Image (cartoon, rainbow, N blue to C red; front, side):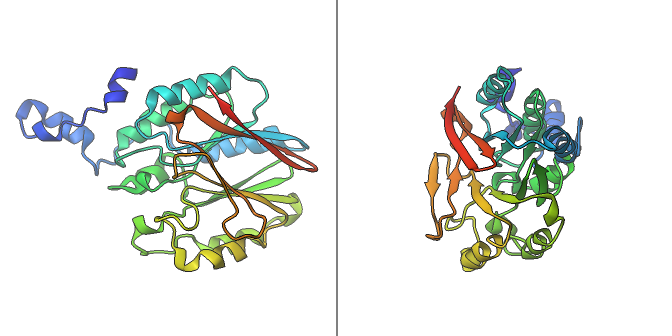
Length: 271
């Protein structure tokens, strides 16, 4: 199975041979027929919130950019499953490379082998072809939140270029609504996204306004991003809010965060 997935054989060049027509339909970039689990994020958010309710110390793994790296993702899953101190996993996006339905399904099935719950943020490659529609069917809304212990996680679509500015990305209305919702249930906030401010995907016309808005969340601890494929720690706005960028999974690294009543710690973990 690893070999089949790793090669990701897309037979478009021979699609019109009658014996291969089935393969063409199966891998057509606009195929939206989905098999297997859907609503993955919502189901796992329920698990996260239940298992972390009342916890004062929460530990999670942040990883991303798994596109085409099926073997490495399987190894990541096995590494996390070998531990007993991680509450959940956040995937920072680019679960697919070409927006193909099969890519989402294959990576979902690998991630579903995790013994802890996980959520996936939409990445720019996930938006190719009709990938954003497939993503939303399999995983859920492009913007979502959840609470783990005393911390609210706000997960955002920031891939503005992929939408050609056809609708608000980032969605300020969604963010504003979340600032005013259930603030008594959490005391700290983490904001997560795929594309960080000042990269080519972000709508940098509103980067400063975005930062000013998210700083209204109670005790914003830090921000998370993927997309850049390397470990990064940047204070983009010189305001003390660090953006932590996770390496792509082929680097065989992820970031392990520990949230405590007094702040947080993080470490780069290899597998």
